[in-house]
Length: 374
Ligand code: PLP
Image 1 (cartoon, protein in one colour):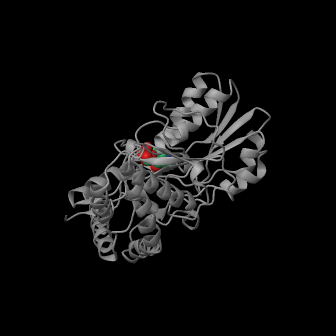
Image 2: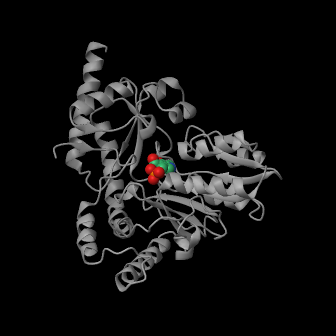
Image 3: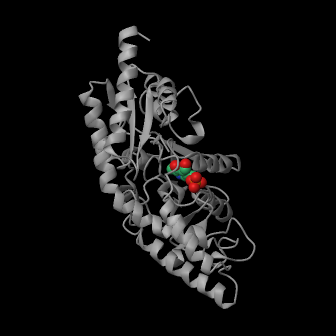
């Protein structure tokens, strides 16, 4: 296909070679892993082995992993657990959380919980001092993402875990964007919950997992009792095996991804395009960069690149149709900057040649605007 895909943070290009491998493997053993016959048992063994492998990627045990329909469901499980465990209390989130956290918090607010939103600074980070001020004896949950989906900025989760009383406050992190992009150790971060999505690393959509330190979490979906009774529904052996294989593929490509991101910056500078990086580049994921182009409106750039078969985004996929610009960049800077900022997210198929083409196109539009004034 003759296009350049730079929207990996919305959904990674699939590792189609893995899909083919897993399809041929499952053609030999297609049974429901819960079935008691030999074929079912065989798949159950495969499922358990894969889960052990997946758990290790965040320094957890298989018992702490609950497969879900993705990051959204994993986030919902955490807030549902809170709703079932407490009848009141205070929850602290940041104002850059994904909508699946924000909406859950909003729901609990309507049911009487107090929700406190932390701002981020120009570097895209929350302030520990600010958090310290907001914590009190009523705080029951802190839910802060490990890395943001629009800027890639990494939040100080380990520092958070060190300043809170872990006996009384639960700590959740949406690690959807960070997973397999940076090292994650749930024990070091002292997390109670962490949410992961498979399609962000080239595995299937509608699949992922929740890490839970204690397995007494309230199930969100009940029924046949799969996932040790914590999440019912026939086990998805196909997605599980793909996720297992996609982990290595993504992790192995991440050094190159980081080099490619730096190459993009070098090329933009070489062409003397007026741009700035949103947030602190030295504290960001290797695959995401958010750029402010002083002369070019984000929507215009997105459309121009789209016509040239280059796909980038204005922000989160759910809100990229929003021509007013990203709310996150507005929170970090101002409205003007938000209207002139785009997210470029790269991955395993992003070559230097592709970056060269993209930069040339941006240069073309930037020069045209500079010459003609629009
Ligand atoms: N959290 C973050 C930070 C995300 O970027 C996304 C996906 O856009 C999600 C949660 C939701 O994950 P899923 O698409 O697997 O439901």
